[in-house]
Image (cartoon, rainbow, N blue to C red; front, side):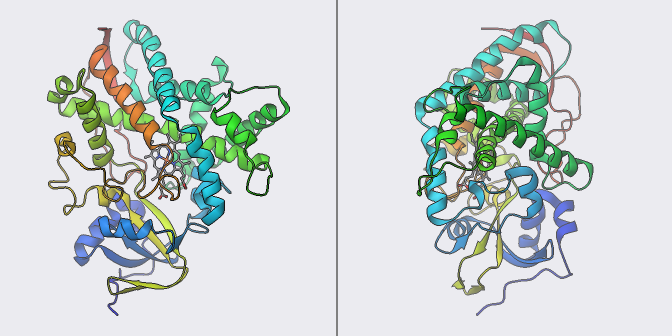
Length: 415
Ligand code: HEM
């Protein structure tokens, strides 16, 4: 049996926080291997990247999710008791609940609501000063997803709810104030979402059939029981929080249009080119660095031993930038998606494998739809200037974002 190349030193957590998205790849490059062993948060961990690794990682016969996500991630990002930490029948049942919401019609409806929000906002941008796209898009997405999900949201609450939904995302990889803000944001958001679930269940609200609120509030597990209020709140937030997080991808799309202006003309009015552009934004820009699982029972793979219970991290960012999969991975080239055959283990910004039976992101189609709507608006319905600003994206900051949040000026409606 071969020995997995190992990192020296007691624990790599400080290095992970320092190197961020490059942590796994930098060490894989050093060891000349797509697998290495280390300790993270004091636990022995195997890190993997690349297509064969993704295929292995998403084999639910070999890995489980229970106990895989560090507590600090659960307390901020995902919440405790949600779909991310379930396995086997309990996972399939809960995941089915999520996927039943994601019909093509529902996905288009959310896209339309976002579009309406965007168009309604442009006049204010025309008459106002500089616009920070990240802030604006976050609030538009909050309004759109709440309307879509059947969640009431008075205008006076939009900024507060957006801040909490955003705050949970920044929590897991932060130390100190940003982490504490994440904890607080989750506490407030779960309280709010729990109240909304209660009101739907007693009939004070009546969310439309098929909407996220209605489906989650009424979902019964295989024993016929409703989800406990707190779990239902966690799952409702598993719809609202990541939809608002698409604001980061919208900002990255705006940055890509700025850095590669030839693509503005290429995507305009061309749905296929827009899709290729959006896929390349998801591949190229950093979002989730890694995802975690535990070995279900011991097995050997490519001559390496994976002992039962060992934590394993799949490098999502590194797989999306793996040279064996993506020629010239550090170049932004949407044309690489022309004729691309959908590969569930090659493009993994939102996880890999199966949507229904595996842990692949439930909101991938929504993400693509919202990004396409944003790109269409940025190139087809308005003009704007991008003044000098700090557009640097630090790969050590998780989740990443251009420092300025992407400021635009001189906005004019063109269609
Ligand atoms: C902002 C863009 C998004 C990114 C980068 C993203 C990324 C991810 C990743 C990396 C995973 C974990 C995959 C794994 O552990 O193997 C995940 C899971 C999940 N995502 Fe997303 N996501 C996004 C948007 C969304 C949206 C819009 C929704 C819902 C409307 C959503 C709902 C979920 C759910 C419910 C899971 C858990 C799936 C499971 O454990 O079976 N995500 N996402």
